Length: 439
Image (cartoon, rainbow, N blue to C red; front, top):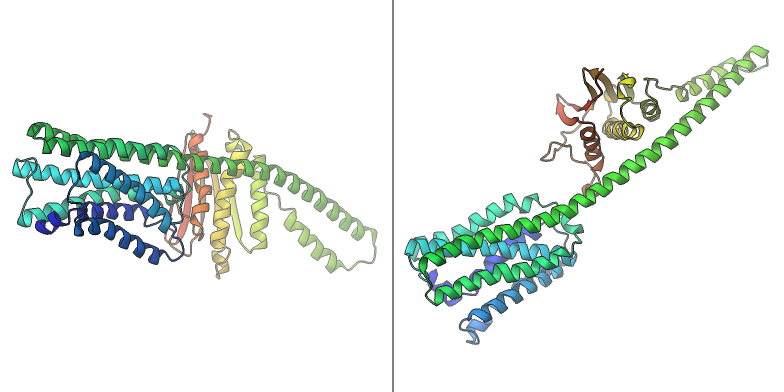
């Protein structure tokens, strides 16, 4: 194996680079005919790696040539990612630079182990130890990179990243990661002290890890900005809906009372009106006159609105709420918290075939200095939960949904509380604790 790699030495770094870049790109949206595009990319990379050696055009690289070639390869990988995947240049920059940095960690550790085993700067292992180091070190590094970095990268944030600082990361990787590695190799060829080379080989992976963390922070910061903007937009929309709902419900109540008085007047006046018709009209009006009264105007508004929605869908909404316990909260926060919770419950039970299971229970109770909010409903399917314990959206377009639950958690945390969700015996529950004022 070592003889083959020594002959075709350009294949090893190319394969080592292709693996982490593929791991980073595997969840990205692909362009049409991506399989054909990917095959073409592999053919081009293979030709670039093999043809110069096969023809004798290249027999080796000095320090400046190595730096130039590795930098160009990095830029080429950015273009190849754009060719296969339907992403922005900033996304391609992240995947290429992060992949290249992972490759440098693997190759650097591989050389370090060879140095420590052979006690020589430029010696290579042979036989089984060579196979274990050549294949094992990259495998361990890429597995660690996947679990610590790749799988934590949010796909939506990666796709939507538009941070021009990624361009600076390209320069950092070229100068710091590639340049540092090339300098160490040049020092080894010039016979530098073995202890110095070992120390530099220890430092190099640390520098690479720092670069990876910096890249991830850039990506995470952008994603956090996107989520914050979306959550603020939802809260503003909920506040607007609260005002409109309050006005609409008041207008409906006034109209319903007027109609009921008119019906009573007709009945008392002895006019010839079918009594059964009047009774049917009265029953219909009662549906819209069923105002929920808990002692908190904002809670009354959202519960009245959702009780109407439940009535029209054959859903039984049971409410046991001390509305006054929520007086310390802003009306828009109450509307958003309970609106999101009940919307999710209504969506979960509205299509259940068993009418007895189309039921939602909501309670608000004061517990000393805390206020507990609980919402329960039957759940036909086992929901999936994210790493932070929040239920994941069941909508197909998961990238653009799921902000409601995060919004509820932010509201709970804003009032010094917490949110917990789970499922038990087929019943989904959402528990929110809020730090109320001392009484």
